[in-house]
Length: 299
Image (cartoon, rainbow, N blue to C red; front, side, top):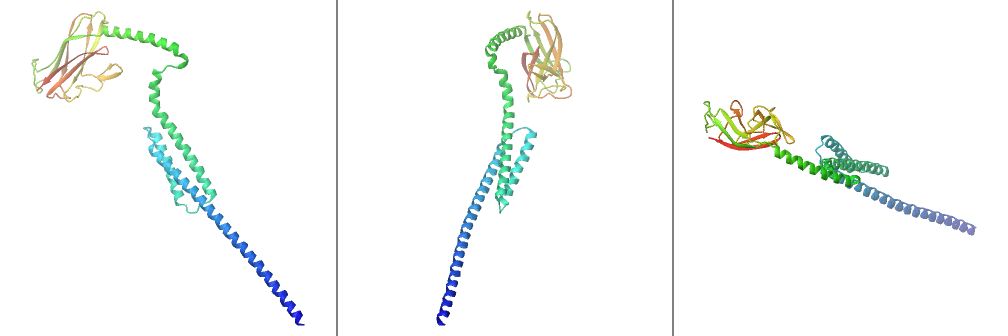
């Protein structure tokens, strides 16, 4: 009987040992799995944080790049402001997000890619705008490659023709002599005092020139005060000079017949601008050329 009791006790102890061993094995497995899962979780978190840092860095670079984009186009400047605001908003969102998932990282990366593409489009567009004027100017000087030989020959012919035309224009240009400008008072006497001058008389002789086209011609006078203010009665007093329309002080139409022609032009000292003391400059223009210059002084 004692043997039976001992045998039962041993079996019970053996069963208990087996259970303890099994539980120990399970515990070890659970602990190992926990550490493996924890390590994997830390690795994932570290990888996500690295991606987050990379996204923040790239957004910071994009925002900085927008600061360097400059253009005088108001429409593009408004678009730049909106695009840069989106970049800064996304950067703020990324910085303030504490828990980030793979899906969120993927979404951020897509947005960064889109914003980067938009910025590149702006760079191309602004560069194109900045180069446009240079390209237009250069286009007039460049010769297209496929017509290079023909164009070069035509250019030489055109240049020779232009030289001849310029020589003819210079030869036909009106010339002045005995040019003088004098302030005169109410008695038509020359005065040197600004307060007494009622008119400025500009006198000159158009010299003989058989190459000049005959007929009616407008002679324009520009009188510049000592402070470099043009003495003109109206902003509408304009004439063509080279590629510009510029103001004149006084004008007179004459009929030129190729011979010496005395001419007098008067500027009345009424209204604005007032005469002041100092040295004045008078320039004469006709047929698109400057044909004379003189000065006078008022006290």
